[in-house]
Amino acid sequence: QVQLVESGGGLVQAGGSLRLSCTASGRTFSSYVMGWFRQAPGKDRDFVAAISWLGTTTYYADSVKGRFTISRDNAKNTVYLQMNSLKPEDTGVYYCAADGSRRGVQVRADPYEYWGQGTQVTVSS
Image (tube, rainbow, N blue to C red):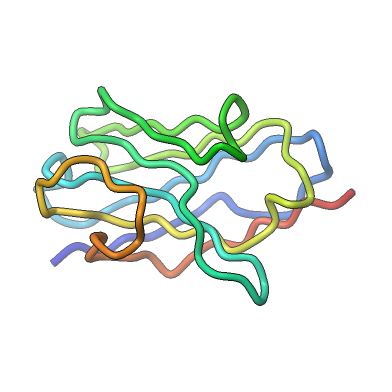
């Protein structure tokens, strides 16, 4: 069982930056692919970014490429999402998720078994 706790959300003006953190319980954090997803009001939960077990492989949604960076520190059981040049359309609840299936980095929500409670990001224009 893995418990995930996100932090770092908030209100920021367009063009600003935020860094989200997600800390996991347990001693096997490095065996999980980690992902970030977001959900805007009235919309589906969308993929944002994902990172492999050792951080050597990353994937990004086209809408965030070049602006967001996912990273992880396995010694701290933490995955990060650095968000720069934020836009109003980045507004939503951001969730981190863990996938222990060992099937590689996934960009769909289905394979992720564990989810955090979410942190709100609001970007004002």
